[in-house]
Amino acid sequence: MTMPRSASVLTAAGLAAGLLFTTPGVARASWHLAGSGAALAKAGRMPIVHGVTADATGSSVRVDWPAAEVRTGRPVAGYRVVRYAAGTDTAAVVGDGCSGTLAATGCTETGVPDGTWQYAVRAVQGSWTGAPSARSAVSVHTAVTPGTGATTFPVSGRKYGPNSWARTCPGICGTATASSGSTLTGVRVSLRRADGGYWNGSAFAATTEQFVTVTGSLDTWEIAFPFSNFPPADSDYTVRVVASDSGNRSSESTSTFTVDAKRPEPGGVRTANAATGTIGTIDAGDSFTLTYSETIDPASILSRFNGSPIAVKVEMTQQSGNSPDVLRVLDGTTALPIGSMVLGARGYLQSSSQTVNASMSYSATDGLRITFTASAPRNGQSQPTLRSALSWTAAEGGTDLHGNHVVAATVSEPGNPHLQF
Ligand SMILES: [Ca+2]
Image (cartoon, rainbow, N blue to C red; front, side, top):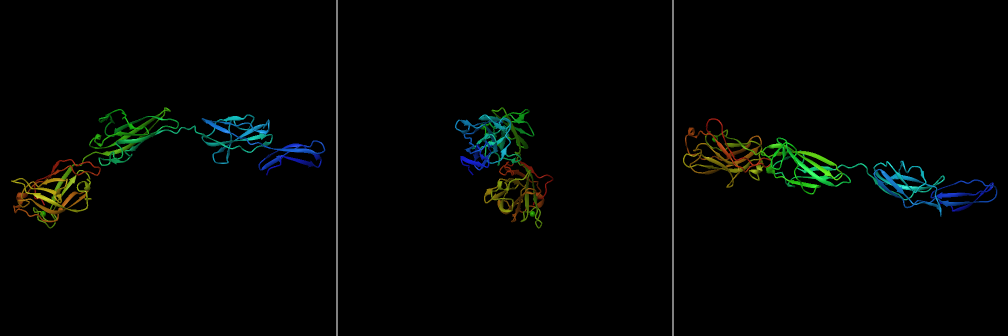
């Protein structure tokens, strides 16, 4: 509703004179009788304040606005400041400096809580209050968001070996951010071995923390660190990142990961006679088993091998003179990277090399087992001369589940020589 700008009011007692203010939607008027006769009541709009500005310094907000006038040359008597939570019509309690009715055309509210606020100003004339001005938004952030430093590789809690180390970064990589309002000035990273000391550039030997120079940008930093820097054993490692900023603040983070740098070793070798076979004779169903010091990756022996039985061949070579017989496992004509097994005696075979069909399987508990699926012709020696102790010279080709290559070494069967197969 909009009241007319002027109105004549006729009272029972005669005419009254007064001043009438209206605001959109609201109109209230009061006047007093001034004798008898006709009186003219003039109506004027309460002005709306325009051009409100609000600026934050810390938790204080300075609010300014131009004077508003009831009519030309006559400013309103006062102003009232309203503060809203941004995007709402919920008025907050305005604090010290801007509370109540103000005569000035500006004020500073102190102790404003963090957040985004909108300020408006209403003109005040006596008991009349004008409509709110357009709002001016301001953000108050006095709490400092702390900076961060973090390692993105290696991932905390994970285990790494040669086949998983430094796949997506050259070694150790991470990020850093400055605290709010600041910029990064430095990132320092240390690496400590649980079973040793801090990395000093050439070994995990430092007893006090040593920082490694980072490359790249400070917010996405990296350290070139090849897997060969780790000692050849299993251990936990801790990365500590300290990020510093221009606000003289620093943040730190630590993450721990595990490295498997220990290489598998040949653990043992033995033969078995098939239940229906003849001891001392290589029958179908006879087998020999190679065990490693830890679980190996079947695919590192043969790419299509997952541990389930697959067909292979066993090449048996009758060595010249009195040298013992030697066995190798083939895929077609290619020797698998297992190494060779020496039977410790000669005469298990005919006096020539031969290749016999077999199957190969693997389990973490039983090791690598090769079972003959065909019998091998032998040379007819008497069995007592075949008593022997086996030896196995492992090759480096196979790896454990983390990519560490098998140590090329020889193990021998313990105990007294005996008939094999
Ligand atoms: Ca046998």
